Length: 138
Image (tube, rainbow, N blue to C red; front, side):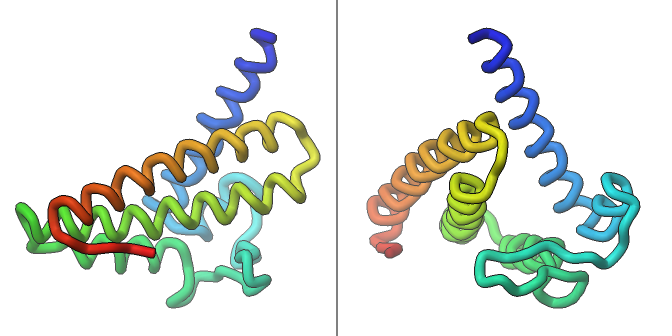
């Protein structure tokens, strides 16, 4: 059991590392480092390809961060929460794909854990939005 937990932890840490690299350096550089490919793209849930254009993860993250620029206090907090809900929902959507498409049990276990954790955090953030700003998010 300990080995399975270690594998799940390593897979999770690896996934987070790749995601952070992707967000910091962009899809192309991470793809090139991992697989030696450029411009292949990433399949999105709607079967479109995420490429180095306006729909890329790096571009989306840049736009999310740009919405926080110059904001402080309540304006920052509200925008941060709203953007994080979208971000967490994206993780849930990806994890659901892993539940149906992944080969390895460890990936499916990780996906289950991601769905649970992200749903809990989304619920908490929605509670804050409602309590602090009287904003309801569907």
